[in-house]
Amino acid sequence: MGRSRYKIYEPTHPHFVTCTILHWLPIFTRKESVEIVLNCLKFLQKQDALKLHAYVILENHLHMVVQSNDLKKSMASFKKFTAVELLKLLHKENVTTLLDQLAFYKKAHRKEKTYQVWEEGYQPKLIQNDLMLKSKIEYIHQNPVKRGYVDKPEHWRYSSARDYNGMSGLIEVDRFW
Picture 1 (tube, one colour):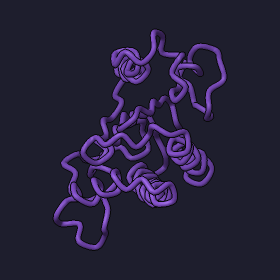
Picture 2 (picture 1 turned 45 degrees about the vertical axis):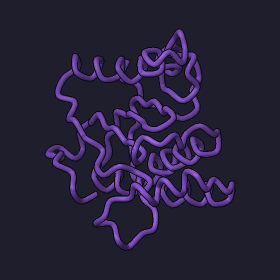
Picture 3 (picture 1 turned 90 degrees about the vertical axis):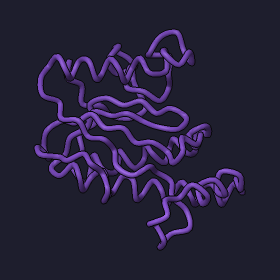
Picture 4 (picture 1 turned 180 degrees about the vertical axis):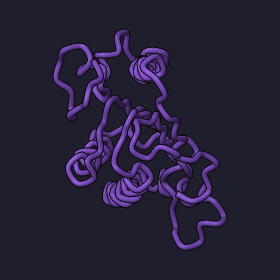
């Protein structure tokens, strides 16, 4: 993930992370594209012992509170796998407008690839205490509400807000309360 100015000093502790689609392009507007993200997270939960504490997936970015034995490795795997699978989906569905934009906005130093799906980095922020943890989880869950997509956080399908409100979500979440 090369050029990020953010560093992970506590690789096994919970972090708030943000992953943004290149140039904020709306890739997660189809159920199939979101399923790629969810399936990758499920795989990492099993293979990398990734703990997903909270998440929200919006049309062009996602936020999570996650931890693993090696967060840098887990996030690199996540972004690499999802990028490949999202490109396969876009090609299969012949979504040429998005593919053209992913090629056009690709960073100049990325010469080995035709497309770039994710913005570089994921802005990891170490969760330092319970107050910060609650604040980040609340921020995650309120994101679709602030955008005016839903009235209540638990109404957003692609979020852990349901899990924190006693309902079943789409993926296993390691809740803090």
